[in-house]
Amino acid sequence: MKTRESKIENNCSELDAAKNYSEIWQIVKNTVKDYLGEYRAGMMLFLDDLSLSLGAYYPVGTNNIVLNRRLVELAKATIKSKQKINAFTYSLLAHEYLHAIGYLKEIEVRQLVYRICQECFGQNHITTELARKNPWIIFNKNIINNLSSQKAPIEVVKDFEKNNQDYIV
Image (cartoon, rainbow, N blue to C red; front, side):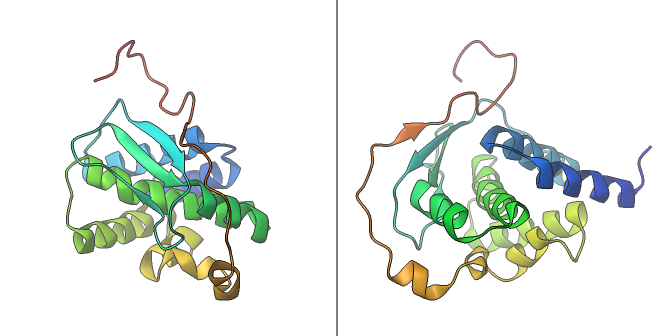
């Protein structure tokens, strides 16, 4: 049986090493399941260009999470730390995943994300700091306020959820 410290170390290492949305998503699902004992399969991820004040959203009653492509691309372009980019992406996906498994009140979801991060990554990890304060703290306000770009078509992230289902729920 793993100790809490070894679980934290493992979660931090996995998140830091994650190379794509699918790998971060697996960490989201594992940490939520470890903390809450709840799980949902069959989710799909879409990337869309949204307002920079919105990180992602979950259309209630669907299997979809829509992540703000512009915001993630901005993070990748302006933040040189892969650890911070992965932590930022984790916090957005974890928030929407909690909505998808039935937690719909924003304040409750924010508190849960913080408690999950604290328990699964430790008090001093960047995910916990982002959950405690606000994920947007990683950005320089001037960059966000002065950004404009063309809207691209919505995009489905291929191989986002890797499971044995051959059908869409």
